[in-house]
Length: 384
Image (spheres, rainbow, N blue to C red):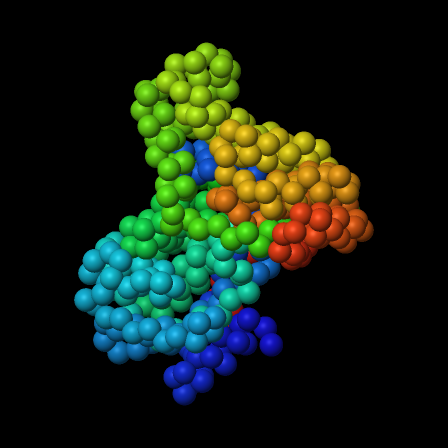
């Protein structure tokens, strides 16, 4: 049974009626550009075929009921719970956050019943939260006939996560979940929110992206992610720039020398060089030179490990094993402290690379990783 069918079946089971429709939004992999989004920088995600589906139908009044396949819970909330941030907690907080953000923006949000099913793994750095937000947002926009264009939806969904849930994420995850196109990566300027859909035809190049779940889950609503963001904001203030995106790569060593300590210098160096790696990757993809992006992926991982200090032994082991087994490039993807690794591999070599990573984990005594090969998929959409 597909995830869409599971959502519909769950809706019928809980509410004893069929849904009015089903809306899907994907998880995402960030090809390159980590911790650049909240620094007004550049990112290059693509959407996964793994999706979260919201089956939904109108419900009278200012009340919302949502059921989760994952937990089996049904949560009800009304206008009182969405007049202030954080009044609904746990997984349902992401749903309530979307209602809250829509109302804060002046929209008349329809009451609704929803059933949620998902294939996007939690805590793997594949942005399950943004997939949930985007699917619910798409459902409520359609059910209410709301005039909210797609290009405005990521910022609203981000506001829900930042201010209602309390996770200090940037705009990338929601943009990918909503605005990606199949067969393309999304080149996003996180300051202007301008996008360019960059062709990323892995099949034509005889390549594949292998996504390896390290099974060392990360958490965004924690001190480490917030600490990195705070460090970047303080560094921008010390350098008298609006954001680290405005620090040029030319003369970077001289710029870093103006900062008071080595840790801050390393954090800034990561962001500045990572922005440049995104731009360099885009240029190669525009030229259809996918095979040549591998060294940029490796340099990105090295920077995350050494300068931004967000990797863990499991992801470092996965990257090292993948490269030793012949991957053209590999890096951690996502916010860090666990999550997933992506590897660019020859299409007929993905099993060899995956097996090498599994063997390396066994030798280190780590929990066995899981893996899948993925192609760029589409963003949020109504299914029926």
